[in-house]
Length: 275
Image 1 (cartoon, rainbow, N blue to C red):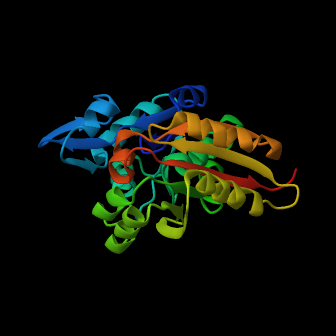
Image 2 (image 1 turned 180 degrees about the vertical axis):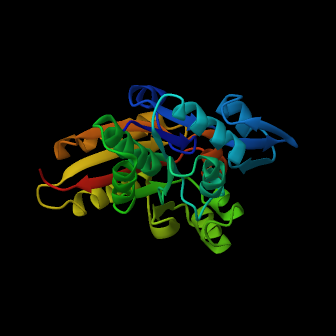
């Protein structure tokens, strides 16, 4: 049995990795000034100049088209989506896959951006190794249960507007000049104790990764950013002593940046068992 992997563009999956692992990416939607457009239609800088932007999931029909295209060349498809708790994407994928009963499995990554990308790549590796659809989905679920994401943003304003954190948290961050930190895990955003500077925020994020390491564990890691690639690259370099078996920089796409704002940096990771 051959298996293809499909995901949505909320995953911060670089295009070269998507091509290398033969992952089909279904784009999210933006509504700008009342007009709908696919994510990636215009540069992020130009998009952020717009006063009001709404985001939405791909349609069930778009997932159905992607799945159908894959089934022209493989036997089964596994779809990995951003967290069901944060978006209608997972539901759209399930509706879109209903026509292909028995040939498609839909997995909730319980994350987004780099966390989702790590789940997708785990599924793609299993598929490339010849695993059947059930085993590919099982590997995606295993990683989804382990993956963690921590990040810092210059301001919580965007997350507050989107209802992700209480309004008082955004006000406090702005007034006190602190660097807010948050964790996205098991489908939920949780505020962490803020840092007093960008350097302190970086140290706290790196410490989260190293403290969570099991003895002999193998690290899979993504350094995340929203228009802050040099900072993300520096974070990744500082994890080199952990000898990660998978490491790359992932940029937040426009849909994610609408909710977090520019300037975000973070780390998504999971530890595999010792070999």
